[in-house]
Amino acid sequence: MRRHLLALAITALSIAGPAVAADTGRLPVAPFATLPADVRHPESLDVDPATGEVYVGTFDARMPESARNNQLLRFAADGRLLAQRHFGPTPLTGVAFHDGQVYVLNFGASKL
Image 1 (cartoon, rainbow, N blue to C red):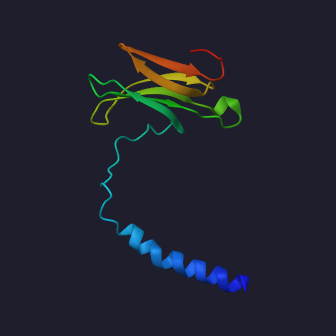
Image 2 (cartoon, helix red, strand yellow):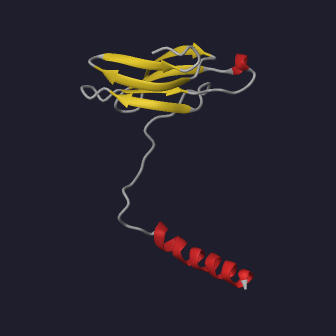
């Protein structure tokens, strides 16, 4: 009996899948920016409302610690990389933009 219910559930999901994929109410999506080759694991972001610049912090916690490459990145509103600051092995868990200042929560150092 359980096998029949499982088969029925799988069949129902396979039929519903294309209907969900064909949902015309979804908005189109396009990539905004590409991370630099040596940067990984974007964790948080914020936007300067005046310029549209996007600030992104990374959470690279791979081992060994010496392989980590945490950074704060600043992208233009069109996705071009404008600036980056290295934080080394220290993961960044929060980024906020307020009154012309960027605030970074430095997880490893327990500092804002």
